[in-house]
Length: 186
Figure 1 (cartoon, rainbow, N blue to C red):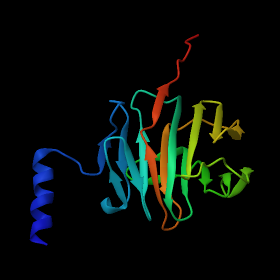
Figure 2 (figure 1 turned 135 degrees about the vertical axis):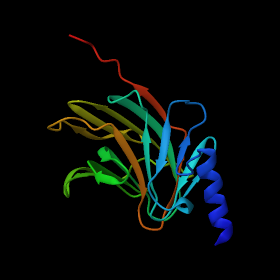
Figure 3 (figure 1 turned 45 degrees about the horizontal axis):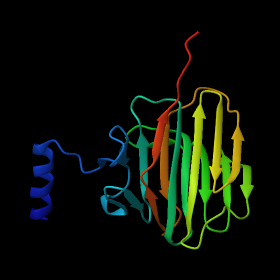
Figure 4 (figure 1 turned 90 degrees about the vertical axis):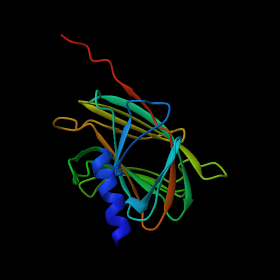
Protein backbone atom coordinates (compact mmCIF):
# COMPACT_ATOMS: atom_id res chain seq x y z
CA UNK A 1 0.00 0.00 0.00
CA UNK A 2 2.82 2.38 0.88
CA UNK A 3 4.56 1.61 -2.43
CA UNK A 4 1.38 2.46 -4.39
CA UNK A 5 1.08 5.74 -2.46
CA UNK A 6 4.68 6.70 -3.26
CA UNK A 7 4.26 5.87 -6.97
CA UNK A 8 1.03 7.90 -7.11
CA UNK A 9 2.73 10.81 -5.36
CA UNK A 10 5.62 10.72 -7.87
CA UNK A 11 3.17 10.86 -10.81
CA UNK A 12 1.35 13.76 -9.17
CA UNK A 13 4.55 15.71 -8.54
CA UNK A 14 5.91 15.00 -12.02
CA UNK A 15 2.66 16.17 -13.64
CA UNK A 16 2.25 12.86 -15.47
CA UNK A 17 -1.22 11.35 -15.67
CA UNK A 18 -0.95 7.55 -16.05
CA UNK A 19 -4.49 7.48 -17.51
CA UNK A 20 -3.48 9.57 -20.55
CA UNK A 21 -1.27 8.53 -23.47
CA UNK A 22 -0.16 9.55 -26.97
CA UNK A 23 0.22 7.24 -29.93
CA UNK A 24 3.53 6.95 -31.78
CA UNK A 25 3.45 8.26 -35.34
CA UNK A 26 0.62 10.68 -34.73
CA UNK A 27 1.75 13.38 -32.31
CA UNK A 28 -1.64 14.93 -31.69
CA UNK A 29 -3.71 11.73 -31.19
CA UNK A 30 -4.35 11.31 -27.49
CA UNK A 31 -5.96 8.55 -25.47
CA UNK A 32 -7.61 8.65 -22.06
CA UNK A 33 -8.24 5.48 -20.05
CA UNK A 34 -11.63 5.61 -18.29
CA UNK A 35 -11.31 2.22 -16.58
CA UNK A 36 -8.86 0.61 -14.16
CA UNK A 37 -5.29 1.14 -15.35
CA UNK A 38 -4.59 -2.60 -15.59
CA UNK A 39 -7.45 -3.03 -18.10
CA UNK A 40 -5.39 -1.33 -20.85
CA UNK A 41 -1.81 -2.05 -21.99
CA UNK A 42 -0.28 0.81 -23.97
CA UNK A 43 2.72 0.35 -26.24
CA UNK A 44 4.20 2.72 -28.82
CA UNK A 45 2.36 1.29 -31.85
CA UNK A 46 -0.75 -0.27 -30.31
CA UNK A 47 -2.83 -0.62 -27.21
CA UNK A 48 -4.70 -3.62 -25.83
CA UNK A 49 -8.18 -3.28 -24.34
CA UNK A 50 -8.97 -6.04 -21.85
CA UNK A 51 -11.93 -6.93 -19.66
CA UNK A 52 -13.94 -3.84 -18.62
CA UNK A 53 -11.59 -1.52 -20.55
CA UNK A 54 -12.77 1.90 -21.76
CA UNK A 55 -10.46 4.13 -23.83
CA UNK A 56 -11.44 7.49 -25.33
CA UNK A 57 -9.45 8.73 -28.35
CA UNK A 58 -9.30 12.37 -29.32
CA UNK A 59 -7.62 14.68 -31.74
CA UNK A 60 -7.94 18.05 -30.03
CA UNK A 61 -8.26 20.02 -33.27
CA UNK A 62 -10.84 17.75 -34.93
CA UNK A 63 -14.58 17.72 -34.41
CA UNK A 64 -15.17 16.28 -37.87
CA UNK A 65 -12.85 13.44 -38.77
CA UNK A 66 -11.95 10.30 -40.62
CA UNK A 67 -10.24 7.56 -38.60
CA UNK A 68 -8.98 4.14 -39.64
CA UNK A 69 -7.18 1.40 -37.77
CA UNK A 70 -6.64 -2.34 -37.65
CA UNK A 71 -7.93 -4.37 -34.70
CA UNK A 72 -6.96 -7.89 -33.68
CA UNK A 73 -9.12 -9.95 -31.34
CA UNK A 74 -6.56 -11.75 -29.16
CA UNK A 75 -9.16 -13.60 -27.05
CA UNK A 76 -12.83 -13.56 -26.19
CA UNK A 77 -15.82 -12.12 -28.01
CA UNK A 78 -14.58 -8.82 -29.44
CA UNK A 79 -14.86 -5.08 -28.87
CA UNK A 80 -17.06 -2.03 -29.29
CA UNK A 81 -16.44 1.31 -30.95
CA UNK A 82 -18.66 4.08 -29.59
CA UNK A 83 -18.91 6.75 -32.30
CA UNK A 84 -20.48 10.16 -31.72
CA UNK A 85 -20.29 9.52 -27.99
CA UNK A 86 -19.96 12.15 -25.24
CA UNK A 87 -17.13 11.77 -22.74
CA UNK A 88 -16.12 14.08 -19.91
CA UNK A 89 -14.37 12.40 -16.99
CA UNK A 90 -16.70 9.42 -17.58
CA UNK A 91 -18.78 8.14 -20.47
CA UNK A 92 -21.97 10.25 -20.59
CA UNK A 93 -23.68 9.08 -23.79
CA UNK A 94 -22.59 6.06 -25.82
CA UNK A 95 -23.80 7.47 -29.16
CA UNK A 96 -23.73 4.88 -31.96
CA UNK A 97 -22.41 1.58 -30.59
CA UNK A 98 -20.57 -0.60 -33.13
CA UNK A 99 -20.06 -4.12 -31.72
CA UNK A 100 -17.50 -6.24 -33.56
CA UNK A 101 -16.61 -9.92 -33.18
CA UNK A 102 -15.17 -12.42 -35.62
CA UNK A 103 -18.75 -13.67 -36.28
CA UNK A 104 -20.69 -10.39 -36.66
CA UNK A 105 -20.61 -6.61 -36.71
CA UNK A 106 -23.61 -4.62 -35.52
CA UNK A 107 -24.47 -0.93 -35.13
CA UNK A 108 -27.01 0.19 -32.50
CA UNK A 109 -28.34 3.52 -31.26
CA UNK A 110 -30.36 3.78 -28.05
CA UNK A 111 -30.86 0.00 -28.06
CA UNK A 112 -32.22 -0.09 -31.63
CA UNK A 113 -30.40 -2.07 -34.30
CA UNK A 114 -29.33 0.19 -37.18
CA UNK A 115 -27.37 -2.33 -39.24
CA UNK A 116 -25.62 -5.71 -39.07
CA UNK A 117 -23.08 -7.84 -40.96
CA UNK A 118 -22.84 -11.61 -40.49
CA UNK A 119 -19.21 -11.99 -41.57
CA UNK A 120 -17.10 -8.85 -41.00
CA UNK A 121 -14.02 -9.93 -42.97
CA UNK A 122 -11.46 -10.98 -40.36
CA UNK A 123 -8.33 -12.66 -41.69
CA UNK A 124 -6.83 -15.85 -40.17
CA UNK A 125 -5.06 -13.83 -37.46
CA UNK A 126 -8.42 -12.31 -36.42
CA UNK A 127 -7.35 -8.88 -37.72
CA UNK A 128 -9.88 -6.53 -39.34
CA UNK A 129 -9.83 -3.01 -40.82
CA UNK A 130 -12.11 -0.41 -39.21
CA UNK A 131 -12.88 2.95 -40.83
CA UNK A 132 -15.10 5.76 -39.57
CA UNK A 133 -16.04 9.03 -41.22
CA UNK A 134 -17.83 11.52 -38.95
CA UNK A 135 -19.06 15.00 -39.76
CA UNK A 136 -21.94 17.11 -38.46
CA UNK A 137 -24.60 15.37 -40.57
CA UNK A 138 -23.19 11.96 -41.48
CA UNK A 139 -21.50 8.89 -39.97
CA UNK A 140 -20.07 6.14 -42.19
CA UNK A 141 -18.65 2.93 -40.66
CA UNK A 142 -16.61 0.35 -42.60
CA UNK A 143 -15.68 -3.05 -41.16
CA UNK A 144 -13.31 -5.12 -43.27
CA UNK A 145 -14.24 -4.28 -46.86
CA UNK A 146 -17.94 -3.78 -46.19
CA UNK A 147 -19.97 -0.74 -45.24
CA UNK A 148 -21.70 -1.48 -41.95
CA UNK A 149 -23.50 1.83 -41.57
CA UNK A 150 -24.41 5.04 -43.37
CA UNK A 151 -26.19 7.17 -40.80
CA UNK A 152 -27.68 10.67 -40.89
CA UNK A 153 -28.19 11.60 -37.22
CA UNK A 154 -30.07 14.53 -35.76
CA UNK A 155 -28.33 17.15 -33.63
CA UNK A 156 -24.67 18.11 -33.27
CA UNK A 157 -21.90 15.56 -33.70
CA UNK A 158 -19.81 14.94 -30.58
CA UNK A 159 -16.19 14.32 -31.54
CA UNK A 160 -15.36 11.62 -28.99
CA UNK A 161 -14.53 8.08 -30.04
CA UNK A 162 -14.46 5.35 -27.38
CA UNK A 163 -13.24 1.75 -27.58
CA UNK A 164 -14.40 -0.84 -25.03
CA UNK A 165 -14.10 -4.60 -24.64
CA UNK A 166 -16.99 -7.04 -24.89
CA UNK A 167 -16.99 -9.20 -21.76
CA UNK A 168 -13.57 -10.56 -20.86
CA UNK A 169 -12.11 -10.10 -24.36
CA UNK A 170 -8.68 -8.76 -25.22
CA UNK A 171 -8.37 -6.75 -28.45
CA UNK A 172 -5.27 -5.04 -29.86
CA UNK A 173 -5.85 -1.68 -31.55
CA UNK A 174 -3.00 -0.76 -33.89
CA UNK A 175 -2.02 2.91 -34.24
CA UNK A 176 -5.09 4.71 -35.59
CA UNK A 177 -4.74 7.16 -38.47
CA UNK A 178 -6.98 10.11 -37.60
CA UNK A 179 -7.52 12.92 -40.11
CA UNK A 180 -9.24 16.22 -39.46
CA UNK A 181 -11.75 16.94 -42.22
CA UNK A 182 -11.39 20.19 -44.09
CA UNK A 183 -14.38 22.35 -43.25
CA UNK A 184 -15.38 24.87 -45.88
CA UNK A 185 -16.37 28.24 -44.49
CA UNK A 186 -19.32 29.92 -46.20
